[in-house]
Image (cartoon, rainbow over all chains, first blue to last red; front, side, top):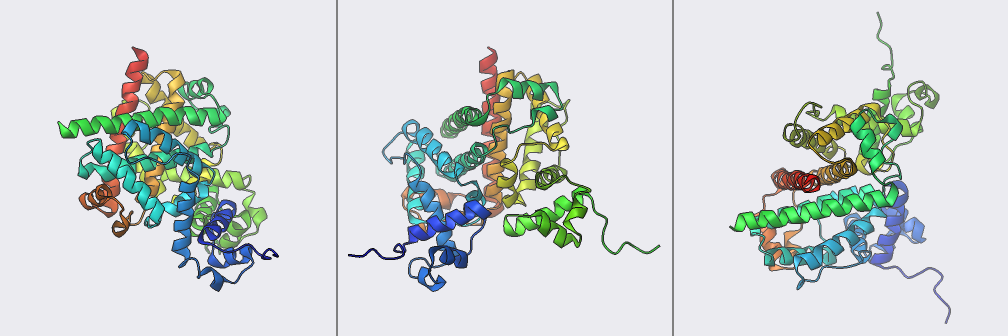
Length: 205
Length: 205
């Protein structure tokens, strides 16, 4: 049997194509995605309902690229550090997608399932209901900010432009490149997770 | 005296114009900035050295828009919470600038002065040199992630798509809109700053 001359369309393929455009230009249009796939825009609408749906598809792709998903039966310690590191790594490869996905209500079904699991683990760990969304938001903010930090250049601060002894000492004492980003991320993730745990204990007692 | 027919160029005016383009499209080119200012691209080079310099100009604009700058003589508690909230607010109005400034080495003189002050306050508070850049990076990551959260829609998660009781309870118990973002930010900022303080004490003792 002959192969089809153009690869078969799917919502995921459309999302992957839109992501290539976002990586390259910071933006995408439905028309440009169709062009790149060599199809008419109307063909895309058999697979996605529109622009928002494509953004949700890109959001879901980031989960596909996350190394370890949280297990609803896992403890906080088993679930979060490894999952959040993988989630950061997925977004670090697509920094320009970040402000796009944060500017739209989360609707993607697999992503909502992931948040559902996060909430379940937090609640079972004793986080009171009125602190659940705060805990999720704080983890999200820290991890997405850290993803941008991974995507930063090897030298984040121009050391020759340092204006204080303390800043010169800071740059000199720190590693550079990915080692710097990973070290800071791990310390900060520990700070965030331990702090949320402590807050939970405070609220319960 | 007649007014000049086009407003006088300056590095700041160029940065403001580039920022309008980034807000609208996620991107800018030197040519498009010149077009918008009604001048030839070559005229811009009397004020800026090129694209990177314009990015640094936009980075510096965010400091101009930050309500309270850290005072080098201030204590940690006096300096950071108010400054970091203002810094978040400045970036929250320009979410698409965020991945652009994090992808370039910080060279802007006023911004380097701000980091210089942050390092000075941290060092005087007892943060050891090899933890200074981590502390700055962790604050930066959290605050830039939180700026994106402020720019999120009123409803961040589609509650009708929640997949677990815990996520439904989380959404129901939380405020919406700016109140939600501010509440989570304040809790998270407390977690981050207290955690960094605790870490400092641990390292010193």
